[in-house]
Image (cartoon, rainbow, N blue to C red; front, top):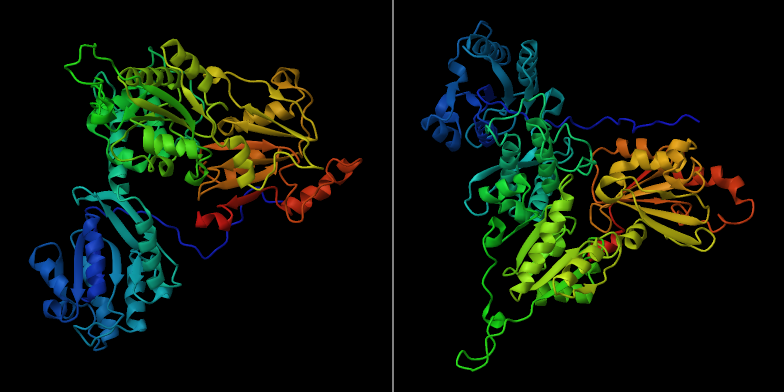
Length: 624
């Protein structure tokens, strides 16, 4: 059986590029409102705009006349241009006039847009297909890409329906743009889709992009000389691995300038992936410096983010009980610390207790980076929220600073809610925090959460136990303390293996499960797994962009590479429970001689391909 290792290309799409024609000439032929839109888009991209209109300035639309008067563009009368042809035919003459114009320009023309192929209120003239074709051919002869309005067969490129985001506070344009194309199958519908995409995004999204851009610049500078690291040595987000969680050594005090820049750029990638948009948009320069310095383990929305004291207590949280005229000494109100689980991500999966802690009792919320913005958005505006900066190489120091911040706030009488994804006791380091808080005089209240180890597979249609398919399950981590290797469980046909925090180390995990080499097998406690055992990688479980990559152990690494960028957080599920509910289900996996049908099971499950990709949630969850 011949299978394709990667998706087969299917024609009909566009190669979407973000073109920057700064200081380049864009030639627009036509004077209608479409020409004005093309001119405005080119001007925003810092291009030099030249406009040719039959009939000159008087035949152009009001916007083009105004922009010409303001000196934003140059407008020429196409009829008055010199022409190398004596033909009386408008078709021949226009093509030759345009060609002569391009040839005699002191600077080359880089793009041509023909817009007068549609009717215009300002003129009765409408360019024919033959005329547009002649101009397009001459431009291509000079290797200039052409766009012709309403004539897709003559186009080298098309325009997307675009939106440029502005800063919600200042109204100034930001670097963020989104574009939609239907590849000629509905331009008006493309505009509607663009509007719906824009309306669904946070109003702070543009400012967030701008702040991350500043962070990237700061990350590349050395602290000693404040000069950018050599471009060949630096790490950029484009050249970085597909996951921002790739293991890195713990931060060293002896790191070089290049190592420091690489670490800082990885931290920028972490912020881009995990932090709420609102928090990114509100970053101050002082906070940016603190983030990249790494001396602080968390960052807040209030004054304490810069190292100053926490906000003053509200009237209801006064440090003094009773009247100042009482004979008794003033007493400080006792603070409290809650350790709560936020579930796998979807805010509807919060427990009532966790929801109450976040929305009614909290004075300060200390959140892990994995807690999604949809959960943090439930917190009242007056409550300070700080997000732990547990970035690769900095997790241990960040954890300690976070615990110190909780104790300091509780000593001041505040109610601190420490929120973690999933259940706080399932690889959430809750035990360490309980012991630390107890040693400092506070007995924290631990509020359970819906564990991602159970909810993630459920959202992917995988039961961790199922009669006839999986009699038990085991949960483990893919990485030990400070990045050390862990011993993974051996193979049992009737057991489901759930691995948390292992997707970034998938090749090593798969090798440990499969290998018979004694040096590798020591990382496994028990027999090796057969190479055809089903496996699923569940990313962003319970969220709208959930993705499940399903395959067998021998093909899963290639499968994950084929889908491009990873979507952390992710988890791994291994065992026959993965396909047991597919289609009509299979409850005979544990029957006697069931292994003889494994090849048939896999063929029914995966078909002729080595893996299966499932995007999004069950449609019924959209109503939640």
